[in-house]
Length: 84
Image (cartoon, rainbow, N blue to C red; front, side, top):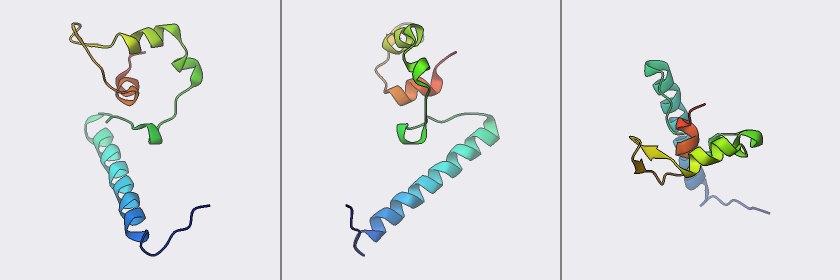
């Protein structure tokens, strides 16, 4: 069980504030220019059927920039910019 003390309050308050600012940033970016920032893993959900798809897995394992530079980015960045 997790017990919080008064010493923990500033840390959790800052974390909650940071998530609030991040949500405002994402909403603003989408509204202004239609852009979509990278969705971090703790704020995104994906269907298992997509993640297990052989075509998707091939794209994830062979991700290139400009068609010639292999990328080694995390799953959250690939899933955000993934092409259907």
